[in-house]
Length: 403
Image 1 (spheres, rainbow, N blue to C red):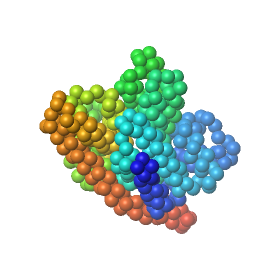
Image 2 (tube, helix red, strand yellow):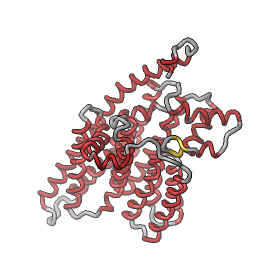
Image 3 (cartoon, rainbow, N blue to C red):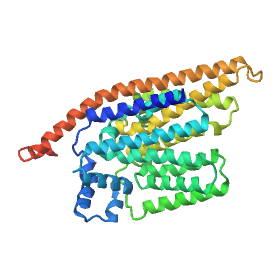
């Protein structure tokens, strides 16, 4: 049965590769023009410099994605579709590491983790699946799971070194990669790492952040904390829309409110049973990463970016994964403790009802996201094919259309 469970987990992986095959188009798009393509050109000509790989791109230092995409594009004639397949491979690695981590921490059967596979590869994140430049965000997710897996192996130099390397790669892949340091600190504490390890981790986080910001300049266009504090209602609505975008519906605020309530309900029931938070260390880390990402986006983009943009859903899908894992652990805990006089029938019934409600919500996210992503994939393919036509006929196309 365990082998069968792992076999079923391959289904969302295969579907993602089919999605890229069906809707991916080999054409540069937006940030690729001034991001990865100049680096690929420099590599092809043999005139690439570390400063070029390390230079800021908008709010991000993207050394490792620049290196990966530069090497790929310089050897594939900048084939964006190959970059998409590589992103899919990185996501496959993330899912494998996440399943390993969850199995270690909870012992859940692989069949019960099938929805996790569909959430990791949910088509609602269409921009990150079909936009080659977004490999950076996918790479950060892999680094996050590797970091958590390393810490879960206990306080030793080997796992600590691996966690530092993962956080370092993430830090110089995208701005949100810096979030791995606080998430790692909380997760390591829940895993029982001693204070000296946590202090060393905090020191390394400060060094990595300082190096990141050194000679960086302004962090791009930002609505700023001052605006957010002056407009708390608009800021809250933006945050809820970010969270609710994973639903694949137009009712982003309602979906965001429902998700927050579901999370609080699941955590409340767990805490009411006086269960240790260390038992929820994996879902809590995933949820924390998603919420910190949302706060980062909200602080910088409140009136500059659409909160329902599909590229933001990748991190909030981690939040839904966390919610699903909490639900499954509530159900398993209630079943294992049946017959214990200290709990009573009411407590077990509440656990099962809350768990079932959360799982139903997660499955609704999978269904809505996949359906919305399929439609969006068709639209993206049509849009990119139009871009291909413009590039082929650029000599006769009016400048206004090219811009």
